[in-house]
Image 1: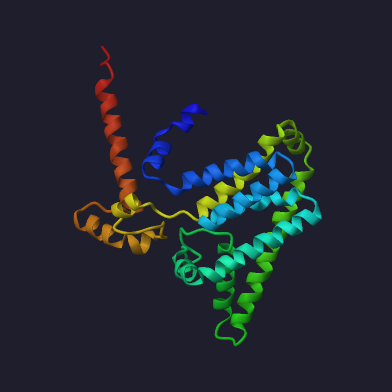
Image 2: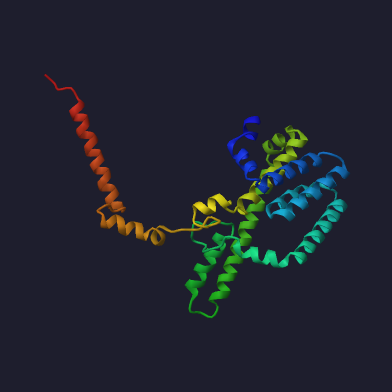
Length: 263
């Protein structure tokens, strides 16, 4: 734990005054307070809401609200929704400028998300039904049905995991504080991954790019392939097989030379 705390990445984040350091400290505060009484938990939820106002992904910490009693749960949710609504009204212009910066792209590229499969299959169904007037409708119906099927499957798998004897026993064996941090850590890591943006140093290295972008071998690497082919080094399956054959022959020749000659 000490080595992880004093790792180079943590020191680098501190040196750059990275905001995520503060957010992770707020996540720890929320976790510690979640193990106390109602008053302490309410303060912890307030810290989580404040962290969500600083950056998008810490809102996932509020998942621990689901363990509260129904009345307390709804009170916290209503207050949080009211705060976020007021924040939206006050900073609507800034948020509107930031939303288009969220990564997006085609559903058949390296950019991945839960919606890729249903939306891609919907587009395929729509293309297959063209030029029918119902092509777009068929695509939407296919997307919705597949999305619903995936959601149902996800819920079924979650239910099966929760009913498994090993998982509840393993979770129950953990101290209560570790259970809370397990939930908060899982939620924060998930939210942090999908909200990631390159820091200033990485943006300079990548000519101003601030996120991962989808690329394809056929289009993006076309220039590289053309240069390689012009120089006599073709990156094709046939060229790879020929190179592998030459390497195998060279290894065989070396073995024959190294083998002792028989009398």
